[in-house]
Image (cartoon, rainbow, N blue to C red; front, side):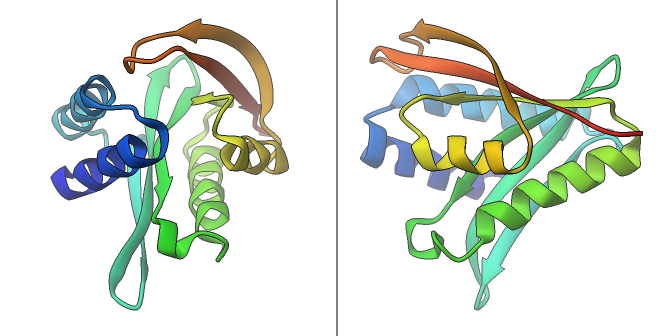
Length: 149
């Protein structure tokens, strides 16, 4: 867990300038995932290419039939190889099997590739709000996917 979060925090710092505030949020998310893990309701996937980590994603139970896709990232060397598609598809498949009604996620307008990925998988933008939680002004977005039963 520590390696996944450290790597993701480093990438976001290098690519977006999001520093310690984002890393702290990711550490809190990871700690909560480990402390409150519910088998069959929460899950984490770590993709590998040639034995090396290529990215990861988490799915957590938010209650009332809602799951949350969290902490999706793909290593720069692995981008364009379908890793993100496979990770998001794994989340959606798991959520369906677990009986969730919806999946939600939080992303940012500047993450254009991620936004296209979510749209391809059927997520719809439901809310936007500017914030400075990562130390710089950025437009946050909430996306949702309704799952068929």
